[in-house]
Structures are given as C-alpha cells and as structure tokens.
Length: 109
Image (cartoon, rainbow, N blue to C red; front, side, top):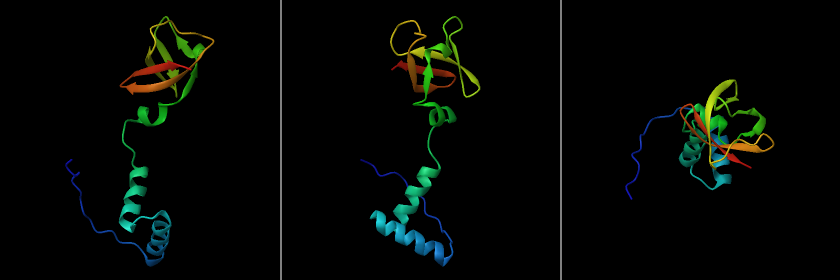
C-alpha cells in the first residue's frame, strides 16, 4: 500500500509547552511528532458541517413531515430518506446515519 504524502514544516514553541507535550507524548506511548499530529487531526476533522454535527443525532418521528418530506434539524430544513421503505412513524425515534448535501438518511431506532 502506498504511503500518504507527508509535508514537513518548522514549528516553534516555548520550552514549557515542549516539555508538557513531551510528557504527554511519553504517557501516550508516542513520539512528540506523532502526538502533535494526533492532536491536530482531532482539531481539524474531515467532512462537512452536516457530517460532523448531525450524524448520530436522534429525532422524534413527530419531527418528520411526511407530506413535504422535510425535517427541521439545527434550524435548517433537510429532505430526508428512511433506510427502510416505509412511511414515517410518529411514535418512533430515528437517528441520522448519513448526510449527502441537503438530504439526510434516517434509521428507525
């Protein structure tokens, strides 16, 4: 498998921060470089806002408008698709499993 291309750059920090990172990296069993890369990866997640903020969120079936096919989530109207080919159940709960543009995929839970 091909290794992902990496970019090098110089990072300047004060001695106290370096020592704290060094101790944290040792405690985590990583090099300082690997530890900093892990921290930066967590701080800059992949995906769209919807993917980061909505996936896994639960909704009440009452929130699904069967007539329009819309649901209001976080102040924004989205179209929705149900994983199972059925009509929305107002008494059920749903979880958002996928986000593709303005369309959310919902799974009955």
